[in-house]
Image (cartoon, rainbow, N blue to C red; front, side, top):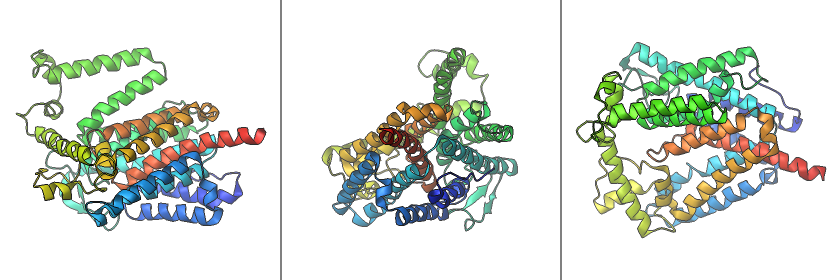
Length: 428
C-alpha cells in the first residue's frame, strides 16, 4: 500500500502528510516546498520545539544563526536574505523528518515512496524523448515556475520536470542507488510488486540519466556503481567497472595525451565521446562550460581569500562580479556548492555544513539500528554522497525539490540513529 500507518498515534497526521509530500514533491518546485514548510510548522505547533531538539538540530540552529549574521553584513542584503531560503527551511525539514521517521519500517517505506515518485520524473523524460517536439511547451502553471519543452534541447539533452538537465541528473543520482537495492531483492520486507516497480524505476531512471547528457553525473553514476559493488562484496563487478572505466577513459582521452585509443574510440557513440572529450579539449564546443567554470572558480577563490570568515553574503556572487567588472560569461553562480557557501557565509559556514552532514552520515551508519534497515542506510549514504559530489562541478542545491530530497534523506537517517540512542537511554 502507498500509505503506511504507524504505531505512534500522535504522529499519524504528520507521517501521512510526509508520505504525500514524498510521492508528489517532484511535480512542483513551488507548491510542494510550501507544503513541506507547513508540515514543519504544524509539527512544531502540535509537539513543541523541544520535540525536535537533538545534537544535530542544535548544530543546524547555530549554523543558521551564523548564516543570518553574515546576511546582515552582506554585500547585497536583500539577495542574501533570499539566499537563506535555500538553507534554513531545509535545516528545519531535516530536524522534523528525524522526529517523524523513527523505525526501520517507516524508513524503508519512505524510501520506496521516493522510488515510486521517481517513475513520474523518468517517465516524463522518456515521453519528451519519444515526442521530441521542443516547440511544444508544457503549461508551467501546472508544475513549475518555468516552461518545460516536450523534446530534446538543441544539444540533444532531456530535462524532465526540472529546469536544467543537471538538476534532473543530480536527482537521479540520489534515487537510483535506492532503486537498485530494492530491485535487486536486497530488501525482503517489501512485496514482489514493489520490487517490480523499483526495477522499472531503475531502468527508466538510468535511461533518463544518460539522456540528460550530464558528464558529471555519468562519472558519478559509475563511481556509485563501484561503491555499491564494494558494499555487496561483488569483487568481480568492482574489477569489471574499473576495467570499463579505464577503457572508456583511454578511448576518450588517450589521443589527447598521446596514449592512442583511436580504435576503441571508433566503437563508442560519437556524441558520447565528444561530450566527454570536450571536458578537456578546447577545440570542442562544449569545452566552453569547463572554461567558464574555471573562470568563476578563480574569482570565487579570490573572494574567499578576501573575506574568509564572514563571506560576502549568500547568492551575492554575480553582483560582486558585476561591481568589479569581472566577466562571468553568463554564469549565474559559482558552479560549485562548497565555494558558494564559503563565498556567501565564509569558511566557518562551510565547515559547519560539511561537519553536520558528515556527522549525520557517520552516526547513522554506526548506529545499532542500521543493521535492521536491510542495507538501506548504507545505500542512502551512497546516494547522499553522490549528490554532494555533484557540488564540485555544479550548484543544483538551489532547486527546492533537490533540497527537499537531500534533507529528507539526512533527516530520516538521523531519526533512526537518534531513536536507537533514546532506546538505550530509556533501557538504562
